[in-house]
Length: 337
Image 1 (tube, rainbow, N blue to C red):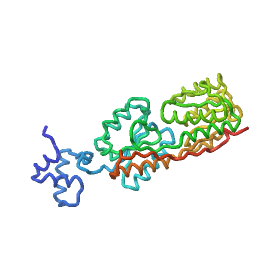
Image 2: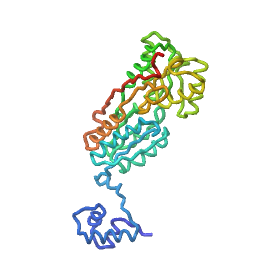
Image 3: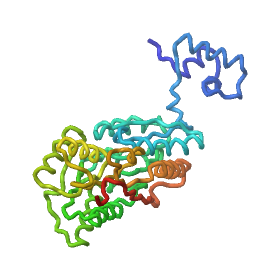
Image 4: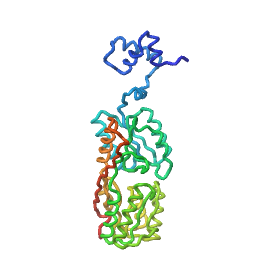
């Protein structure tokens, strides 16, 4: 079968390649009858031009990709909302890619879009502690990338993060001030950047108040609500903490489920604080004390920074780290009864 492309169409219609190209680009600098003739001929051949290849000719796709680990967490949906505000204001579309915390999916997404499908990428990473050397093959001058929230420390790219250490310190200190002396730290992966940083805040708050660090109170959980309910139930039954600091939102939910099943009263028997951007946290029973990250602001800041790089203002010269402040919102789940 003869290959159909701009060159073959130009030859068949006895036109120049540039004229055919202008027709597909909807360029006004072409005779309308000639344009219609070209498009009609292309339709008879079922030919559609590869607009993504225009990136190779110095043109833009006017699209930003946002790569996130999940969408079930309200935090990421709020970030995307912030990105879309900035993108829309600057004439860009947004594509969402969800990795499900799978490094292979992340690698597949980023590699596939690096051929010009998007003009830039915002990413909250999933492969911490694993081999993410695939990024070494990405030309970030052609496709700028900015990390947000979860980052790769060994990749010299700009990132937008929150003050996780200080927020975790304050959350733990709050539980101590509410009378807790046996505080459990729930984490999905203590070795990841966020889990590690939040652990350090928890640890240092205990040290400040001369509370011994107990490894049995640092509990590794999973991404499964069912598994976490079992893990947290065992913690409550056998270790008997009087406070729980959940480093991510889903662990707070599993704590509520476990307490309900075991007949443990919050906050009388167990006080709970969690990182969460859940807008209905105040409607839970009891209302949940949360560390609220400025999710939409993070999305806006990340998109704005990415746009400066896409305009050619340099990516490697001086990678930036923008740190946004979270806030502790005290509710019934952590207060003295």
